[in-house]
Image 1 (cartoon, rainbow, N blue to C red):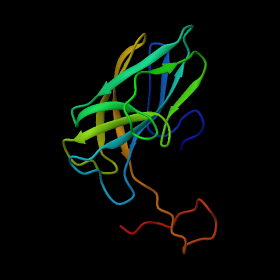
Image 2 (cartoon, one colour):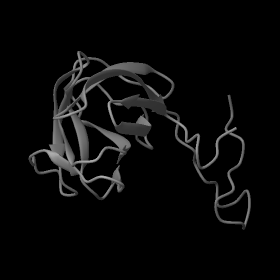
Image 3 (spheres, one colour):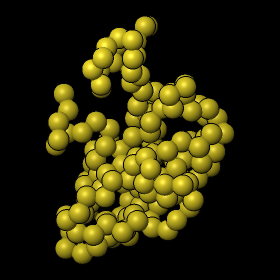
Length: 150
């Protein structure tokens, strides 16, 4: 069971930086195919006394990992002010695995190394989440999903 202090995805700590909800989301129409770009989302919280920065990331399953803005344009490091939650998510600044070297399906695990200016590096085993689809005919209540056929 997950809650506010135990979100789904990979959770870790490196130096004074807490890493939460690190995951790759599977697209709604199937797995990420070889050659595709896959978004990587993560929440970061700096408990230190001074600002840190996420400098970048790397993985063996993609040609590169870039920090991109909401429009997908590459940008520089992400500032992590002390005491502020930074959510690298859809429609915001996030990480992008470019030119996948293999297919990634929901449920797969991928190693990704995050690099911080002060906190250093950490390798995470990141989960590609299985999507939840809403079947409008199954229920009128928003947010409820019907069981998916196996």
